[in-house]
Amino acid sequence: MARIRPMRLSDLKEIVEIENAAFPRPWSLNSFVTQLSNEDSLCLTADERGEVAGYLIATQYVEVWHLLDLAVREDFQRCYIATDLLEHFMEKTIHGHHRGYTLEVRKSNRGAIKMYEGFGFICTGIRKAYYRDNDEDALIMWKDSEDMLA
Image 1 (cartoon, rainbow, N blue to C red):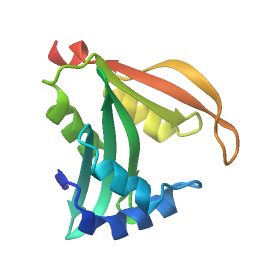
Image 2: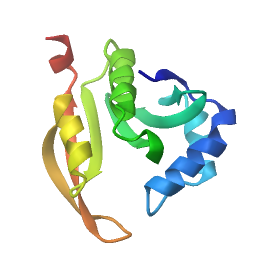
Image 3: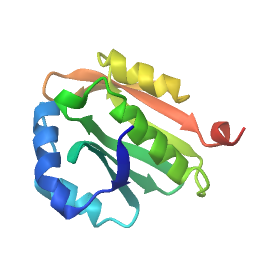
């Protein structure tokens, strides 16, 4: 199991490398710095064997946590790093005052969709042509916070 900890500025070089490898339209370094300095954001890093294996960034808008970015270094994929990050995020936010969690995911990303469904997320809508690199639709997924307390 990866060690999950708060993201640090010193992680950003490795995180930007992971981001660039994972996404056709990656976040800029400045986007990560902005989220790290946002008091409503939660930025987590997964350490595995002394290196950054993955990261998760979420921010709370009013009463909803929005998962903004989640990626895992290619050589650590299929090692449950994303699952560990999401599990830690949910545990850390379960007792806050919020209605639930939301995210967007590429319609073609079956592995991620399956993982999110395993955490109790359901598809509640579609954002047409959400991803600008290829006009792919995004599934909007939602999880009620009450589901976690039951």
